[in-house]
Image (cartoon, rainbow, N blue to C red; front, side):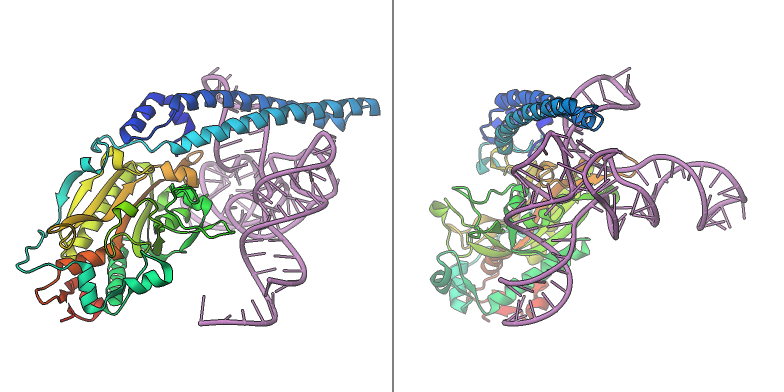
Length: 426
RNA sequence: GGAUGGGUGGCCGAGUGGUCGAAGGCGGUAGUCUUGAAAACUACUGUACGUUGACGCGUACCCUGGGUUCGAAUCCCAGCCCAUCCGCCA
């Protein structure tokens, strides 16, 4: 969420930004309402001040008659105040509705464009897409061959989009988790395993909308709880309402959670196998930082993602996300797209990680602040998130890139200590 | 799930319906003293919003939301959370 005052003072730039991002938002209306709201706020405060004065004077009233008279005056002032307040609250609701729809401002260097076609490739990984001189299998076929994933049983117990990992796929999942977590610990992250459920307010804080008609979020009936779509939600929520000391920043946390997504509206783009599923595990990076640190941390997060996939031996490219393809909270976003030989005709790039600088956009909603010693007041933190490893998609990339002619799969060297084997199905 | 006791400022902890943004302590900052440090002493020490050129002033906030009242940290109702005990359980 952007600051109201900022929107009013930079109405033109905000409107321009909404246009670039393809988000309709009635900025002039918001500016008008905010002006009215401020007037009403002042009115209400003034009325309340006078009512307080009257209340205080009642104790010192000389006669009963005078006391009664002042009581009546106080009552009338409070009623007027309540009325002004009610109007003010109505305006505030209306303002909030517009305000919530306004996306974050955008990094000036982000490529401009309507959708992901305008995303700009900015770098490649160390490894080139492999050339196979045999018929390539996709991960679904490979999984079937080695009895690694049971999609049918998953569908039977929870519907399409759910699956059982089996046998070496289980080891692979656990190995990827440990590999990622250990790497992040070496980079100064505090590891956590987060709740898989969170309150609606926490989801709102990070910019996720539960319970709407097109929500991506599963909610628990008769409660305020929702299954999280990513640990970004819980990690961001960790500091909701907190004020951190500037000296402890940046605070870097990495979390393991299950991720649940309804993938509503994705039916047309439904993808084979593990690519788009309702549940998967993810190791997520998160940082709370000072404003002046966030741009550099975004680069660090991107570098960590690159290192993780380089060391897994997986070919990838990095794209700088175009304005029209950025999510609401992101100021700038990089995606890693891994080469998936079994995808499409002869292989395609498929998104495996994503890292965003959300500046103070999430922090404002979360009310996550910092304080600098010796300075008056508090300011909003910057938040950043990045995927370390989304296990299901990483599994696709590992299996498909490392397959051999006989259908066996070579385990990446960095995973062997955790897997305890070099070959799957060999 | 049942019973009981609780939720007050960075922390601990008081608080008869008006003079309470809230005693006292701890912590923190600055100063006095000291060669330096400690101790002692003195002063200051919440946040947000609004307003002002500025000093400042105003409003709100004692878990949350309602209610009673001219006036609520204090009374009433509902909810949430926490602690302890019992039951159940990986």
